[in-house]
Length: 376
Ligand SMILES: Nc1ncnc2c1ncn2[C@@H]1O[C@H](COP(=O)(O)O)[C@@H](O)[C@H]1OP(=O)(O)O
Ligand SMILES: [Mg+2]
Image (cartoon, rainbow, N blue to C red):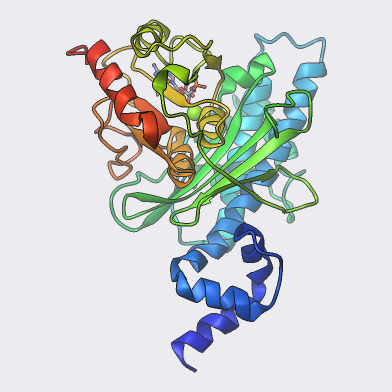
């Protein structure tokens, strides 16, 4: 069989999904095939994309169930961190077991390990996690299976081969406040992020209707654009998302961490002043900020260091980074360097993060560098 024919045959299983993303009606397989053949990278990572979406949707369902309980539960004070801990471990076990089923040889850099769930000290937490995980997987998992699944996340990362990186709940503070949090999964190949999926269970689907449907799944594969769909909805319909087209930085709006301990609010304020920005900044926890910029809800994401010691982790940025790029935006650190995901579990070659649309990026970077001159 010729190479061309082989590609067309292999299109059978996913041509409908591709049609959705190409924004063409689901039409003849031949038409889709001709489009795919003319841009052959579009078929790249199709299975990985589908599996990552499934994993993030399952884990998001688990997190959302705990989140709802936490928000409604009167007996739990928000100071009790155990619900988010249970959801965090459970989400990592669920994602890792989905990945293991489909890609048993792929290592995973995950935020959590099973230490706190071991032995008699970890028994209560372990039992709660095992029960929750079993609400979200097809095949029952024993306590041992769950601990093993969590510990598949201990890979050290690096610059060669492929691995996944997972933040099972990014924005735990937002989760506990009843606000934004995200399940974030990315695939890194030879040090480059190729696929990112972010599940935002509490983010309005349409920011102009903040009280409308909540739950967004954002996804991007390198070279294929960024998309959003409703999280855990019956429909798999996807909408292309794009960064804003603001051309003058003074008309832009900032998106920043709620936590002043994660990103320097006072430096952000100085930069806003320098750029002539008068709009109030949007404060939000987690990688939801990347999604807000990727779909034009805000124009600039600044994550400025609060001290010289903190080193960012790859799971906190990989998925958001590719989604911004594929939505037409730009991401670098405060020195204008691309985020380097080849250094292991951390972004040890970078300091801080700046994301914005391409029109204003250079102006924003210059303002950041003027403000932070010689500080880090
Ligand atoms: N000093 C710090 N600077 C930047 N990020 C931090 C710092 N301390 C913790 N974080 C991380 O910020 C992320 C949440 O960011 P955001 O404010 O945007 O929601 C978490 O993953 C958190 O990591 P950890 O979960 O290990 O505490
Ligand atoms: Mg995180």
